[in-house]
Length: 213
Length: 213
DNA sequence: AATGGCATTATTGTATACAAAATACTTGAT
DNA sequence: ATCAAGTATTTTGTATACAATAATGCCATT
View 1: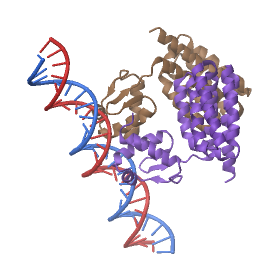
View 2 (view 1 turned 45 degrees about the horizontal axis):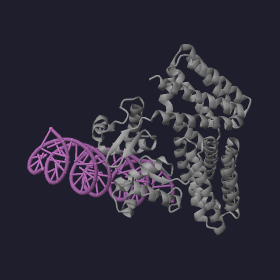
View 3 (view 1 turned 90 degrees about the vertical axis):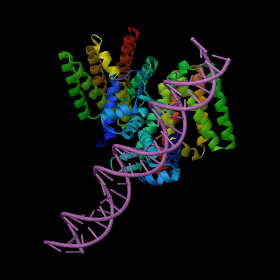
């Protein structure tokens, strides 16, 4: 797929930023990054274009690019939208999901359960991500799926943080079961509500974490 | 704001594509575009990066970029998401909208009404756009506002087309009045429902137009 | 005549060179 | 010592040159 240097660097730099390699508001030096990745300025500038569109960095004309760690308020807004998008996916999926997908969903949920038992946060994070993506897909609207994945990706690191909250994984797991049941029953309203609160809680947990800083 | 050539060309080329200057699937020649806009290949390539992210073109590595006129199915999916985003904005706005904004909204609606009486589609399109954007803003979630504007922009040309349908402007106008009333009453459910169907109808009209081709 | 391989051409991807603008620094005057 | 103006330096924006890869066409062989 992505064979050119630009796309590879996009992923790497994105990862670095999300993992907090750079300070919030720090200016990204084209030349230093070019040296770091062993390329010229051109690919770096193309990387900037792409990252700017996904909101990770900010480009000020003639000033340079700056890493844009979203302000707490902005993050809460994003979580609010995320919970609504997930709720929407759930509502659609309840009426459109296939038997095969339901099986897959249960399977992924089992893996989540095992991760909880093993207290393996990384594994839980991954399986949880897949669990949700199955629902996006089964919304039957691939545009909705794409947009939701985009936001999921953007919020990824922040969703990860709140897994540290004691007991959160277990609670999350219980919510998953309710979501699956609603989908099995084909109950759109319940699926919608379950997913909305499941994600909204994450926003609240995150807010709580922020307050204790 | 946008002082550099790239950003200016982004808007121009975007406009050209949306207005159907290029065939669907047509390859965009970097060199020809560079000559056309009187710049070198570099800014054109930067323009491509940006347009690719907004989904207007498709970049195939080592193959070039192609204009991506969304398939009918994809458009319907986008309309479906749009109606849900607008409904969400309406639901939030019903509880958060300010008195000043309500006044502004009524004012803009009056302008729409005048445009209907004058049978002025261009004016109606513009005021309608502003009308909706006020609601996005009053959702009180600026991230949601930005995302909704992005999709509104993307669907712009297609929303414009269905204004040609006989009687559509008048019907649209009636729906606006219901929306404003729901917001004045602070009735979230009614505002949500009114906006959802208002936009969903556009998708249906559009589908109808497509079927008659 | 059809197909396979080689050479040619065109086009994208990358690097570098140059221009323009913003920032930092120095010098001089008050 | 402080401020201002002008200069130097850094950094972004753009153009062009070069490299790598894919597309095309031609010729030979079967």
